Amino acid sequence: MSERLTFSDYDTDPSTLAQRLIGTRLVRFIDGERVSGTIIETEAYLGVEDKAAHSVGARFTDRTAPMFERAGTAYVFMTYGMHHCFNVVCAEVGDPCAVLIRALEPKEGFAVMRDRRGAKRKTPVRHADLCSGPAKLCQALVIDRAFTGVNLCEHPELWLEHGERFSHQDLALGPRIGVDYAQEWADAPLRWWVKGHPGVSR
DNA sequence: AGCCCGATGTCCT
DNA sequence: GGACATCGGGCTA
Image 1 (cartoon, chains in turn red, cyan, orange):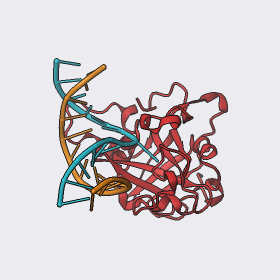
Image 2: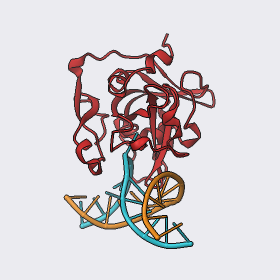
Image 3: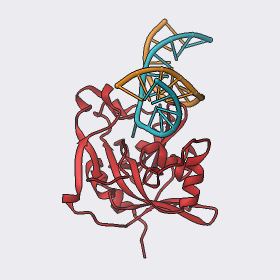
Image 4: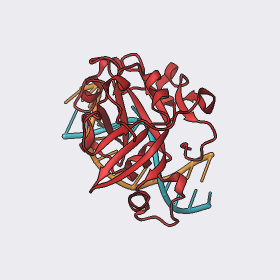
């Protein structure tokens, strides 16, 4: 039986959590059905000093407010006017840190995923590409801003479960994607992924 | 009120 | 490798 992650699992710094979340299962409960995948790629956003983070300089707005909440809170934002990205908040209350979930290995609810990802498309999606990107997994699991601010420790439709344990050897570490504007933070090694996994983004 | 641009994905050449 | 969709957030004024 898989157990849901609790506050103590989330209660740490973003780099530690980003590594810890690799191998855990992201579960979305839709109309009585489990749609889920194993997390295979994450990025840490370090908060106030991190020029790539929305919370840089302790910027507090309607959008970023969930980042200031307790560890285990969901932070979902929209980008490019059409895509959503899902994050897990961590660290102390008031220290706005988060981990971006960038890719999953699909595990349950393939039909829902294909349906959500397949709409208006020429060629069908490759199985490994159902959740091979931060916006793709939000499409596949039907995650949007309705979920920003929810508590993943007790939400009935969205949570994380303990899953596979990858060894340190299985993981790779490198710079984050799409943050070239972040100057000295652009190259910081804060992205973790499962080495050689076909579902890792780009 | 107006402007710029993004923690991306898809399709085209 | 490049164009482009599409719109809310955050900043300037």
